[in-house]
Length: 395
Image 1: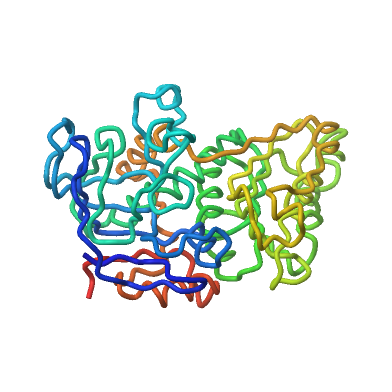
Image 2: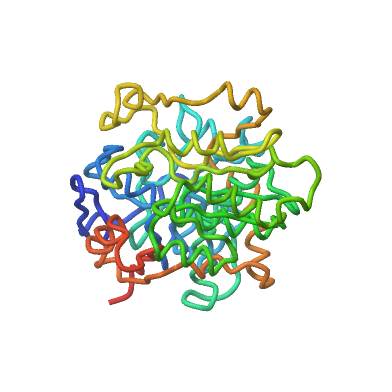
């Protein structure tokens, strides 16, 4: 079978590799019909989270090809999606709803994933055939047929739609809330979309890539280009203008937002120099922007170590965080991986009933063999490469 192998910094190759096989009686094999490139894959591609020589990818959709003898809920031919995070379904964390921190699938640690460093030895999903462990717990059945009008919506269920929704859960986004999201990559866009689905009154999306900001606006969010002016100032001025200065009583200290979300993580670009990293400015901006008694969610990835970090503290996984501001404002801060299983059925049903259309952010569908060029263009934020889906069987 063919698979996308990370071979070096800024280099992937599509190679012939051994076919995936059933290893345990609880496995199924999935014939992959769509597999997306994630912004997290770019951390590996940039050499920031080394993973050379491995099959990568963690956003697959497909059809059951073979079923292990102990699998009860699936049959050959079933259409399924599987979450990025692999769970057992029965450990203490899984049974409490923390499937992203499963204790069984990566012994000695909490959490496992497809094609991901330090998340267990599981092959990636940018391939033609994928082994799904603990399939009864991980695979979610879907209606329809491969290639139908739901194809791009359903592949979003593997990662970015539930991840975006999880960000809004961490930030406790509710009806009428104001929300600021830093980052208009696929996760940031799905976070904005989820906030609007949850009834937020105003959702700001901060980025500097015009194509991404246009997609954010098409979803119903308010785009904020941080190259124009300090995004905190832009948002506060917008909020104040909406109140016409005196619409509410004694709220001058509440010109910010109630919910702030970092959807970028450790490779955030510097405001002053896009060629450099500066993850500190986003958390500093959120500290300024979020109102007293507000909530902050950190959904962008932060690895334990980043040898290429801009200063020694960041190289060891430490940031300068304005804890005193958070304390004095009474701000709640939520972190952590998406707990996929909490949201997948709900989000699938919203798609099927026409209440959600996450696939609208897909900008390109390309053959798997185009992966090297797709990675290059996606990494360069080039020519509208917002969300790329690879098709293993498209010529």
